[in-house]
Length: 271
Image 1 (cartoon, helix red, strand yellow):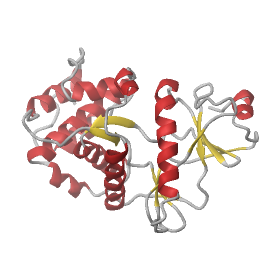
Image 2 (cartoon, helix red, strand yellow; image 1 turned 180 degrees about the horizontal axis):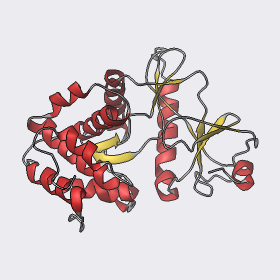
Image 3 (cartoon, one colour; image 1 turned 180 degrees about the vertical axis):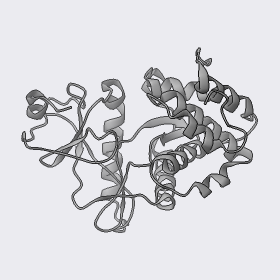
């Protein structure tokens, strides 16, 4: 997957591209920008300007400490568009390394979400219009859409997880959250966390934490012992909804891995 000459021209970057690790492995560095594919123009039209203002606010805060939170700055194309042929751009952050520490990632997420709660007080209108597989899976996980016809292990996992959900569990208020923070946090040369590839959702922070913990354990080598903190009360319901969300949005889903994350009693009959 490579941006076309037209994409490179509109973002005013050279054709010498450097593949970057992380995410789906398709982002590339071009000059002083990072280009990422498969971006939805409708989403980025409202999200990118919001994140750009937020990034400037964080970077220019007079009380800023060198290790304070940062957000990768979205950059528009020369014609003012945020997405060109599915590619979006953000400022390249030299000297950064991927953060693989779950505690640091969760702490950075809490800082991010606390700042967003004061910045974005109402659900963005366009967010409700999303119909991609992640948005659909999220709505199913929260009981806002019916479960589609499934089969085998996936059907069993989803049915059992949703049956265990406590609808009275208070997960907290909905707000703008990053629904894919694990693997999308960098540390700059000063040790400041830098958030990249913002995946927007209007959900409780506890659910975003559950998704982050789940992803970190299954795909980013976090200790499985941390899942023990998600076995009771509201945390359990948040994790159940996180598992349903991931199992329905992954293509394909490693259903057995998600079942094992939920613990004893989720040995699937079809395996």
